[in-house]
Image (cartoon, rainbow, N blue to C red):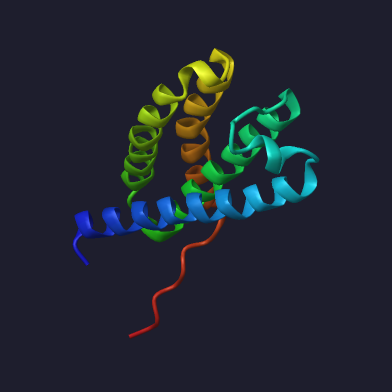
Length: 135
């Protein structure tokens, strides 16, 4: 498979992983934090709710980087592409919500989005590469 296609597919899988983990995690937060589901439509989150959302974003970013790196294996640039894509997707969202959340929330989320995606990719090095069948 051509290198560019592998990078695109790996980044796409990482992006999918980010949204799957974030969606499932959001369901868990709704169930676990009293008042969260009521606060969500108006984005009227308490401090514990914002922290839970940041933790979920961190877990999602780590998972995305891990999935991307495992899919790309010998192409570490794929994780950097994924981190850039995530940042480009979330910058306009956070810009539109700038007045709804404190600065520290936006800064923490956006910085961790990149750093933890790359950290998740680095964690993939702990998993051995699959062996090619003997030919």
